[in-house]
Image (cartoon, rainbow, N blue to C red; front, side, top):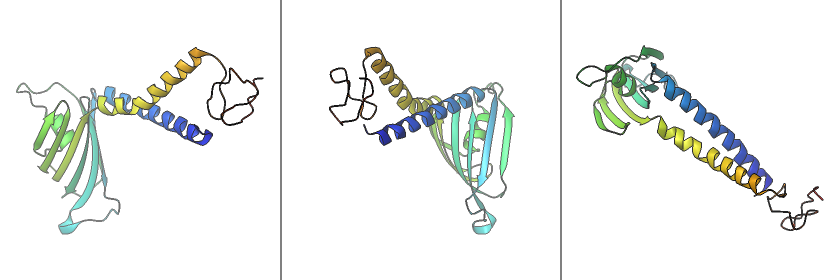
Amino acid sequence: MSRTLRIMFNGLTVLLAVATLAVVVVWVRSYFVAEVFVQAGPDGTSGTFGTERRLGAGWCRGVIGVRWELSLMPQRSYERAPVGPADPDGSDPVYEAVIFAGAPVEWHALGFGYADGLGHIGLTRAVSAPCWAPAFLFAALPVARWRRWRRRRARGGVFCANCGYDLRASPDRCPECGWPSGAG
């Protein structure tokens, strides 16, 4: 592997490790506080008939949701609500308001969901995923790189700084790329 590519992989690994940590913090926090962030469209202008396109994200009870809205109330907002027990009939109004903004849920299974229709604010399209899904997705590369590093470290020996070739047989110079090793 070339030095530039290895540096890029290391940077991506660190970025994904930080993203994994952020998702785990949101995951734990979502059981105590439900939060919604809504931002106006990129141009900040109103759409047809005084409506505004908005993008929102929220989390509640271990689920992260993203929603697109065609809002009748053009404003940016941040809302926060304590997460309490669900209603006796099994419904959870805080969860439904945070994740789906009151839009009719068309599909929901294992924490993944999709809603599309008229919600509390206007036309809403929302998708949701359990927090463990992005956490595992983001953690895949850092865990694989950490395991590879541990395996190489346990084997011992000297490796080329440029390409990673095993230099036990030729400690002065790498036979693969010709890089001087400095170990000899």
